[in-house]
Image 1 (cartoon, rainbow, N blue to C red):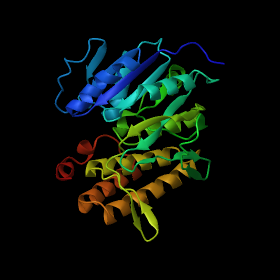
Image 2 (image 1 turned 30 degrees about the vertical axis):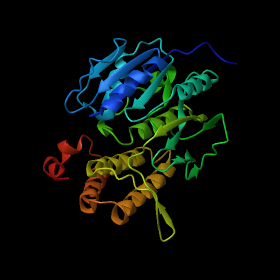
Image 3 (image 1 turned 45 degrees about the horizontal axis):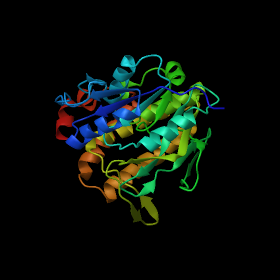
Length: 308
C-alpha cells in the first residue's frame, strides 16, 4: 500500500564545477521540496545567480565529500522523508526522481536506502548489481528489460535517496575517509544496522564513473577509471580500513576489496598513464590502511603529496 506523499530534499556537492554543472543545479531544483548546494571548491564559486529557494553552503572541502553531505544534513528540516545525494556531474532526470520516490513510498519499512540503476556513459553499459554473503560476493549484470526493486549490498552515493529513519539510525558520514568509499562505509553500516539497500531497476541515472574504458588482457577484462594519483591513495587506504573494520561480520568484503585492489593495480600497470605516481600513491594508501591512519593525503604525506 502506498503511503502518504513523501517530502524530498536533495544535496548537490560542487567541486571546481564547470558552468554547465552550475546550470544543472538550477535544472534539478524543481524536482525537490528543498535543495541545498554545498560548494567544496578550493576557491569559492559564484552561486549568486541561483534561484533564491536554493540554499548554498560554502564548505571549502572540509571533511571532503562526507563533510559536504553532513553540512547539508545539518541544514535540512526534520520533516523531510527522503534525502537525495547528487554529484555535480550526475544528470538526474525528473523521471528518475519520480520513480525512486514512487518506489520509496511502497516500502514496508520506513528505514531504507534506495538508488537508481547506473548507466556508465563512458562504457555505455550498466554498472552491475552487487551482493555479499558472509564469505562470498556476487556481481550480476542488469537486464534493462527488468523493472522494480532489487535488494543489493550498496548503491553509489550519487542519485541515491536515504530515508529520514535510516539517517537517524546510521548517523553522519565518516569525514575521516574524505572521498572514496564514503558510500561503501555507509552501506556496510547499513548492513550491520539492518537497514536494507535497494536498487530501482527502472530508475536510470546516466553517470560518468571516472574516465572509464574497457580493455582485455590475457583473458582478463580491465576497466580502468583513470583516476588521479591522490584518488588512488584514498581508494586503497579506505578500502583496507573498511575491510579490516568489518572483517568479522563481512569477510566477503575483505575478499572483494583485495580483488578490487588487484584490478586497480593491473589497470594502472598495463593501461593507464602516470604509472609510477599512481603506484606510489597506492603503496602509501596500503601503508596507511594497514596502520589505520586516517585524514587527508596532504596531512599524512605533505611532501610527497605535492609531487603526486
